[in-house]
Image (cartoon, rainbow, N blue to C red; front, side, top):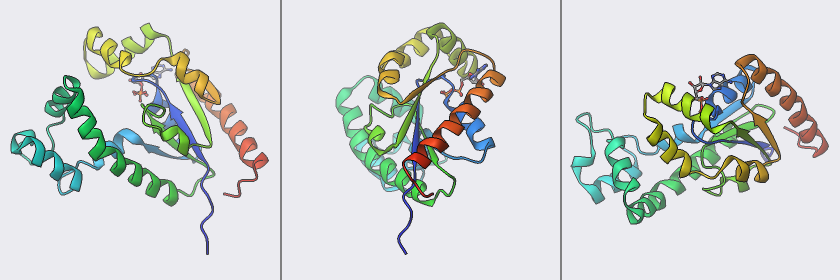
Length: 208
Ligand code: ADP
């Protein structure tokens, strides 16, 4: 028996734009989400081929005492060295892509959300049938990131600058959620959007 094709809804947004918050609201109405950040952590867990390759390149010093990856140290290496960043991505991106694909195939909700901070930058937008971009005012985004991660404004700005802009993301998406109000505003927007996506799926005659 051939498996039905899954309808994939990409949820793209910069750091602190509200991806986790919005995906939880979709989960509450029964939609499964795949978080690319979680997958990125999973593929470098102890015992994985990716972690083995990283240790081969940087030595055991890249591991913490419990043999897990010292992500802070690795982030420091790649943030300051383009060649190393490219190398790391050449190792991890195919593994992330494969794991995401397996999770998409296993999902059995009406559609599956692919939550990704770098959806367009990594080319994963090509895997999506419909794309939602989250847009948020820069000051609000920075305030939320600093509050959540207890980091300073300069670091939050640096990370935001390394991602594509809200404007670019919004132009490439099918629709935009403005995460400017409170959580109850957001909930209402998610409900409306959910109905719209179901209509899109029905029009396209996706049978999932
Ligand atoms: P992302 O997953 O895109 O990095 P999060 O969903 O974690 O962003 O949101 C960043 C922070 O802002 C979190 O602490 C979250 O609780 C808060 N937040 C997100 N959306 C809202 C909102 N509409 N109102 C108030 N706080 C929000």
